[in-house]
Length: 152
Image (cartoon, rainbow, N blue to C red; front, top):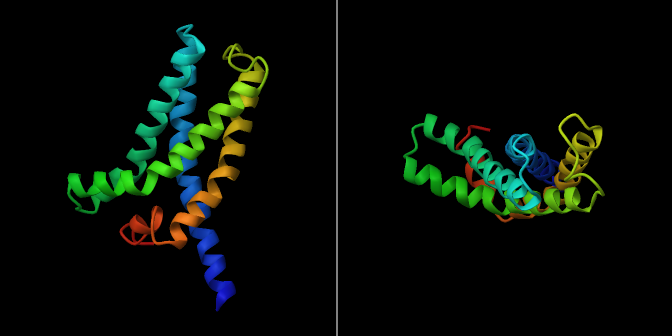
């Protein structure tokens, strides 16, 4: 029974982390592409990417809750409660890795370094965020709160 519970916990944490990665990746890629195309500096690029990562991360939780008939106020509260620590962890790790890769922030959209560092940073952020989601879910927090509402 314990092995089944651990496997289930790991599965839910994996899915929650993949969900977080999806929102963060959409925001990060869109933000960095826009900022790079506009020739923005590092601080503005990272700021836009983070804002968009939170926007898309929360939206991926919020929209299904709204579609299931939950009020906007309750849906927003659930999205913020379930996603904030996960998105924050992913964004801190993701952006730290990008900043640590020499030349990554200066690379253009046609440069392989731009895309390779972005993919690597998101992969590392996934690994760092999984235990955070697992810890939250094991305590009935994070995506455990919305998991039942999504009908899983």
